[in-house]
Length: 96
Image 1: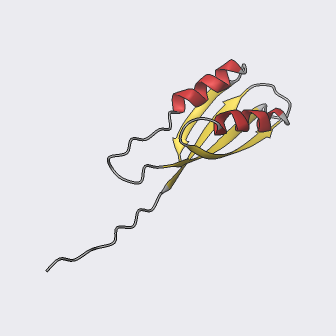
Image 2: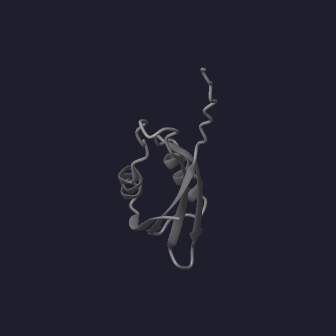
């Protein structure tokens, strides 16, 4: 007897937070978010910035591979590179 078992692949989204400091215009956070959103493996980015503290945070949503054989495409070093290119100081990076 031969059975066909449907295989359903669910993609899982991981969330990361990358803090940064530096003096920027609060509207520049949107530009920064769009640059990070263009990185491979990134689904969505939300940025926030507190002018009075000169600190901000990028919330990065990354879709994980559907199977264990697919490789993860997201690289946090690329986010750090974007922050440094914009004269910002990278702070803590963590998985939420």
